[in-house]
Length: 332
Figure 1: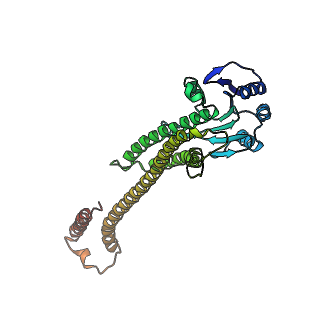
Figure 2: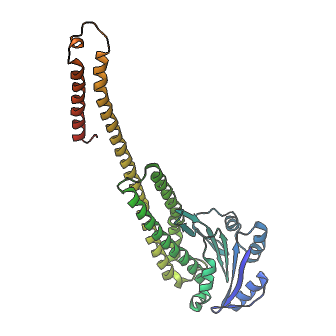
Figure 3: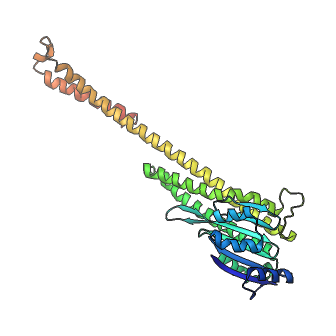
């Protein structure tokens, strides 16, 4: 459905024709205006009118309708198409959720298509309408503002993930060793969330490099103003920080998982040593009792007056000796 539709002229939101075609024609005729249409999870039928009026490329339209795209940047004859993946993080459940945000940029128009709940478009539009200088840059200013808001939120999510990972690290290296299976499951789940976060941030580096003019001879892109490159370089720098943080988090959570598994292995070895020690202590009296339980006639100890207390004392002495030996070696 259409969430918002407005014409922006000389940095201000203005009233204009409600028809898409008339609004776009008026914006192009004036030269200092552009149309911004925001849609939320449109159906194919709802999007057909927008596609026809703005001449959007069918491949980009298909991506916008089906979603489930990687962050990317495509340039077509009549428009530029960019995909962003905003993310949200729920600390209570350690869950990273990603949405999708598609941006069509063309001659005097911006069309944004949102999937999921993570896209900060309403806040971006509200903030832009208070920044006349940025709105005067036209569709390029909108593209920059959206990318900047998404990447800045990446930084916030990375910080929250880092805080929760510190708590998880403290739990793993606590005296009780982290609570065995529950802790291992939580570490693995946390690693899955970092992977989900990486799917949003890492592929975005290539589109941001193109917008910032990094690694390109001239750095020019259709429908993007040349003077905007320093702004996109700033966003790209923030994205680089995010990706470095994500890489660090991923390595750290892998190290924590390995440390936890090593702790579990050591604990299991300790348990096995204790079991083996107690089994060895139980084997000594069992062996002696087994020998005297064979009921042979010619066993001289059977007729001694002190044979019974002597055997009991021997068992007790051997048990004490084994206990002290195992205790000294740390098996008990």
